[in-house]
Amino acid sequence: MKHFIQGFFWLGLYLVVSLLPLAVVFIGPRPPGRDFITELSAALGFVGLAMIGLQFFLTARFRLIEAPYGLDMILRFHREISMVACLIILAHPLLILWRDQSLHILYLPDQPLRVWFAVISLLALAALIVSSIWRRKLRLSYETWRVIHGSLAICALGFALGHVIGVGHYIADLWQQVLWIAMAAASITVLLYIRVFKPLIQKRRPYRIADIHQEGGNAWTLRCVPDGHSGIEFDAGQFAWLTLWNSPFTIEEHPFSLASSALEEEYVEFTIKELGDFTRELDKVEPGTTAYIDGPYGAFSFERYPAAGYVFIAGGIGITPIMSMLRTLADYGDTRPLLLIFAAHRFENLTFYDEIEELKERLEYLQTVHILNDPPEDWSGETGFVDAQMLNRHLPEYPRRHQYFLCGPFPMLISVEQALLQVDVPGTHIHAELFNLV
Image (cartoon, rainbow, N blue to C red; front, side, top):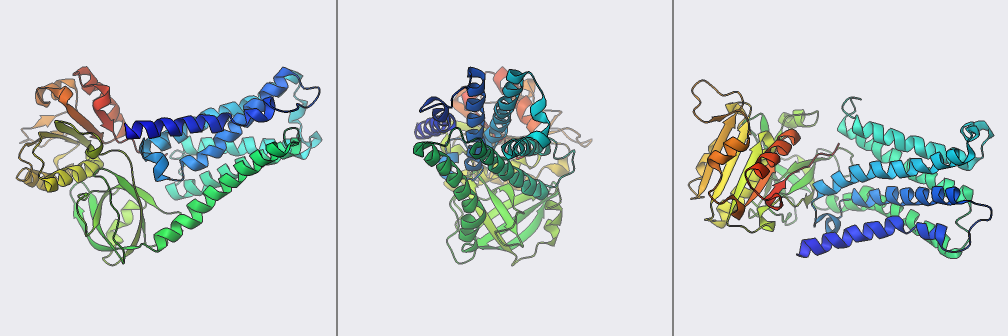
């Protein structure tokens, strides 16, 4: 209930702030000689501008804001609502063109500076969307994309505000000036928090790599020990941003699930699969390397959802947050029924296979089902994919009494969630780690 109330509050506040600029159009004196289409165009432009400004808050990783939803959902909302905001902003000039029934405004040499500002802002927004949707096709590294993304966002917001000031129709009254100054100041403050204050805090709370070893499935486990401080407290299943080698002011930081038990006080562990440029450098990490951790984040944890038992379904390296939950449950001495379904392409891709089998000695009611897409000849377990028929063979007798946690490749999450619904698992009992930045 607590998280529901918090979530309702933040959603309501987002709507209020997004619509607040409408007061600029509909309250107070209006500029003379402006028809309904012009006023509607201005209203849409203001709403879109406010929504773009709010994106800085959504991506600032404020724990108070992300706590009710999980940061993965916040980032997905950021991605989708940014598209909506861009369409709303685009409607602003399109309505003007439709009103005039002329394309003369597109001939920029004849236009004042405020029109140039508007065009630059729109182009920055378009480039931001294109680079985000087609980042991999454009072969942009994650670090390069982050720099481009942030720069374009600042450019779009800055030139849009310049356009508003240049038009001048809605900044005459003192309260209107205060509103726009407050919006600009809030965005600048968030930027300073992200790029200056937060790294300064991390600088005072470094970690060092105490151990690094290779796991199955082409993955590495890094054990991070707090250096001169007490470390972080987290819920099993959460994730954090990890920075290696560089200072916390670097753009090169990456999100990874915490793999260790939430009850472990001496260290935290990340298990990371070699997938990209950064992860392919993990074999070069040595004990003693300085690390910085920003977290924890996320709502993907059994600790939020009390139940008679739990079902965990993992694909590939998606076992990592689930491993944290299993280790934590073992440290609690939990006696509830647990089921782990772990899918992988080949047997050698089953990360933590041996440790999971050992955990059965500590978790009396833990059952495991491994499913391989390309099994060896002597394999006697499940093969293929996690579907409704396979689930019917292994789910508890009363599946509605359990909570379900899914983590793995996005297509797998979609198909497994549909399969769970087919076998009468309530949608409110299904929790998927949807973390995917771009």
